[in-house]
Length: 269
Image (cartoon, rainbow, N blue to C red; front, side):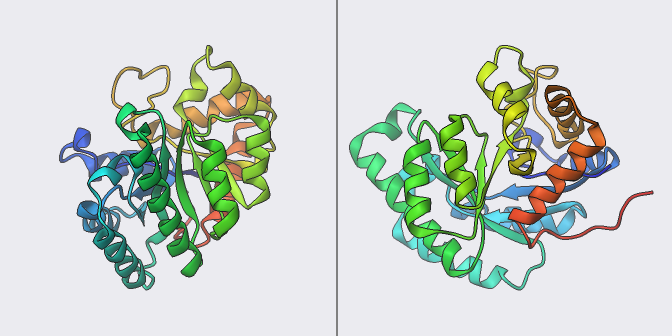
């Protein structure tokens, strides 16, 4: 079986100097590929270099909404230039992590909401211009992110840590997005997320850890890791009442469908 972690902040300070070791351990657990999204201009080169050093890693470039308050128009220009340069890099796969966060109080003030939406739209345009998918942070902002994505139409993407309604899920599916499920799905009290994981078309679902965050129930409140992905996949298989191998095969195919640039590794014996 082969698994793809479509969203993992392997460069996070919580991992210290263990990032490459953790990626190797995940590889031993059949995590064939780990997608490392950037969050700000300052870590564009960090995620690129980390992906180049880990055989089972690749990366995305973008400006996370939490970093938008201190971001400038120059950062958007730098992102466009970095994307253009990265198009020859086989480990560069998407624009991300971008999106909207209307949960953190300081980000909900009118001026900051407007700035977030501006940065989202400009990054969606970069994705569209380079024919790339996006990794979208969608926190209490499902309909607004969907509205902008419908208008600008990047080449698909992933609604990361999806926690919307069935109607919103269908809206994302209709514009070529997949829906990211991870550790939140493993908590028995997460009734709506578990229901969506069980009932949405399996062809619409990709798996992720968001490590070091969103730890699964057996790790919470500890540090999450891409090594946990196969066990998270086992929860999805249990919720759907299907074979684990079928979940690995389909979710990996879904990840490759939405991120066509994902490197292809040789099957492990």
